[in-house]
Image (tube, rainbow, N blue to C red; front, side, top):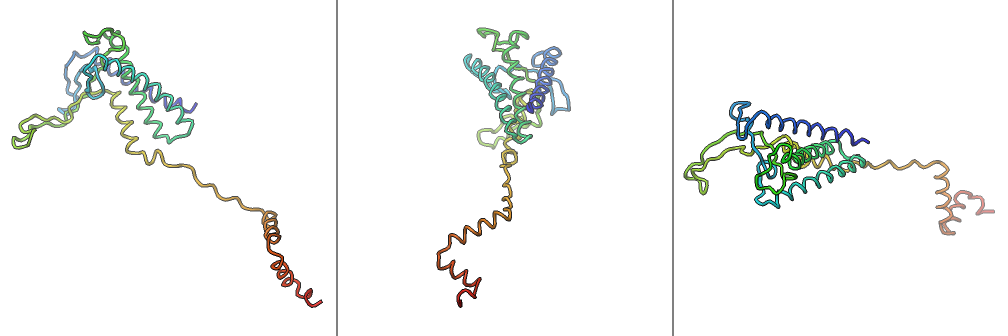
Length: 235
């Protein structure tokens, strides 16, 4: 049952993610923006019918497929986490899996239930179930500028870094995946150490010596006996 602690980590992510989304839903209006730290960290209330970091599907089937994929991935990651815990995988890798699982479940809750309980499904949705929109609010416009006119293609266009709006679940998934990619050599290193060769007993050594003597040709055995008993050759 060692995997329980990792599921608790996922649960903490889910609670924080859902609490932040519900606080935004009940205390901000859509597209409202609040400065948290100057101009580079803001809360910006958006509804995202698509994937993480503002990526959107352009079809109704895509939205439903995304929700189903998230549910399947949720169970798949849970099973994989249990299996890797039983195999005693690196604890850092297991924590990353827990972060990914918590983020996945957090967005599954939005997609599956928010259309019904928060009534935020798109107006053209055939059903509110499985068509809920994910609540995003974290916005980090670190810096912005206009490209100089002489820059090919982009000249004169406005540029903002970092422009996507996301949530705690997205952040948890990103941190888990990025950490696995960065630390994969440490997480997946072969931890099986070579065991030292067993020390042979005195009886085993003597038995091996007798076997070697018996295996020698007869002429070598006779010469060995003569060298051991020189008187036997003169008698």
